[in-house]
Image (cartoon, rainbow, N blue to C red; front, side, top):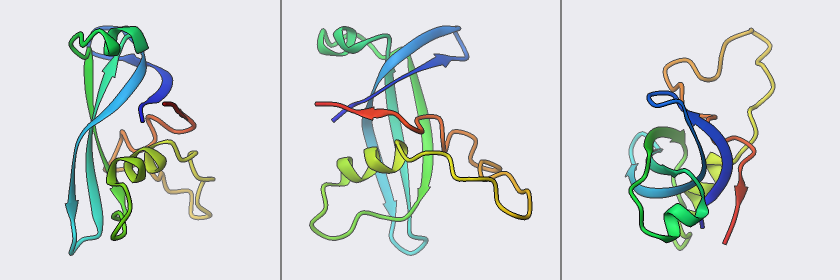
Length: 109
């Protein structure tokens, strides 16, 4: 199921509001999942099979459990809200700048 959230594709300055998980890879030992997300101008562009206008790469902590729909797992993780700032003041996006790009996105059918 795709994600809906308007973001700006920095390289071209165009908004994109519809995003689909294109590919994921699981690192079982490190317990991380790497996700490639294709962004489209809108839902109709995706439904018309137009080319995506941007791609984002996100690494998340955790892996889907056995029997879990891996794409649904990825979408749920991507849509998680940005966590409150840690007590030590560190930035949770350091080293992973796209981690919360899709925070608070709506997961749609």
